[in-house]
Image (cartoon, rainbow, N blue to C red; front, side, top):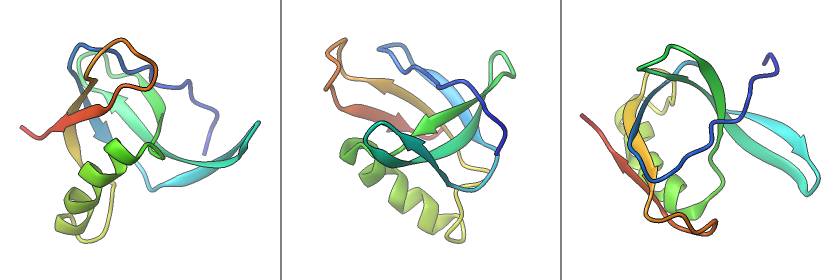
Length: 93
């Protein structure tokens, strides 16, 4: 996977489309799972870390309903608050 910038998720809804399969990248704390995504309103490509429990629990049923694939999933994402440990919210259109 080419080196893409990290998608910083805030409290505003951002619509994304997953553009490739899950991958892992090396971090200071070991390997972390990431998805390549496209930010729909700008067309820019990013990586989205998906190890947070609040995010993975919402992604799993979407992946299963998409033939066990992440690629092609389209949804909107945000965090509940500005707190670094805030839970992710995910909605499909």
